[in-house]
Image (cartoon, rainbow, N blue to C red; front, side):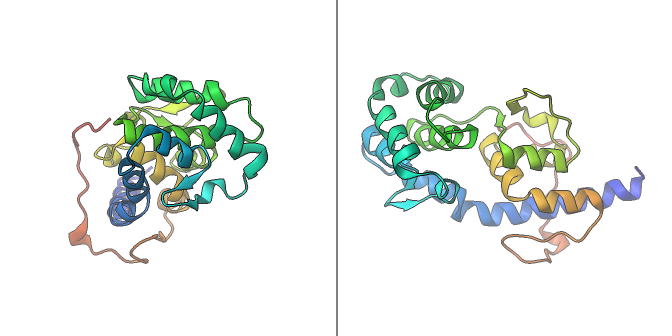
Length: 216
């Protein structure tokens, strides 16, 4: 790895972060805000457990999940255990509770468990302190050359290049999943394609930090 390769890759990483921070507020951020605006935990679970974003659209991750075989049982099970969800003191506690409650349901895998815990956690004020792994985030991590163990379920923020340390763990989960192709291209030295701003981001917009402050 030459110094020229490192500088080029860091520059591409910086542009990916700029694009992500322009895209995320109206995507992942807006989803979480929709749950935070609900009045009660029961309302939150009625939407989250059924894979819907208020006021009712089915989330893209849930489109292939069958409503009656997977999502309805998830919703009913979580609604029957509101007290257990309410008692979670950390996001990890909440994630473990959701996994215990719905992990046996057909097609309710790691992504479904994480998404439902994330939406419920937004209302409870619980944020992830690790980057949880599922198929999309695993692909994003591997695209950056990160070696994952066979049973590894999460990454610490500092396992990523330092350019990304200024983002929260919840944001990094979204970035690894949605920008996995851009990350692979950046590492391979190819032209990066962006979600929000097209193919070009001016250098003056870059804000790569060498020692960013912890966010998770």
